[in-house]
Image (cartoon, rainbow, N blue to C red; front, side):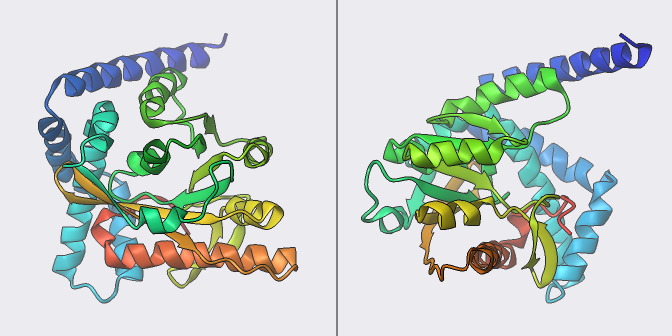
Length: 292
């Protein structure tokens, strides 16, 4: 093992020890306190990070209708939301099981007529506490395979996956070369297939997002076209503190038989929906990602 590899391994372990210790402490605190403390901290730290310039550039570019004061307020609230998401990680199960903290809007209409053994693709984005986007499958008692991006620290990745598993009704699968194969297998078994599709996907297709072409994950569209299964969407909105609602809907899909055109159209439809959420809740979306 090279010296660089050894040093990196040590670094990973130190980072993981610190984060795991903080999460354990947050888990021992009441939910509201565990959410508020890192939220206030990130509201202070976030604007002093390098990524803050990207946040402000994106807000200026894509939210020109906002005043400077409104953009600054949206950026601060976004950073606070990031901190709150971290603080809520140990409490996700408690949150979604508390009707006073978590409520569903439009879910019954979204799943109306959906057979118990029928697969469906569920898409969402990084809004509110996006870790709670798995909640509908828990409420419906449906098995779901969920795809996510791994973090570089393997020690911390393993622990964070345990927390995510608390509200996962099926498999948690890191995105990789076999992701599509795993999704297809799940579709054949009648499982829900969940994805956050608002970040840049280097292997994706170009589709307009907030009016500008962006590399977009087109796996949901491919699955819908191949298996003719429903396309559902949900957006987790933070209402106040550690209280949320998830807005659920079914996207109408019309297949022409031209697979390439259908995939492009459905991917654009998803981007339009998520873009609409961004415009409505700019302070709750993760502007710090390199989307374009």
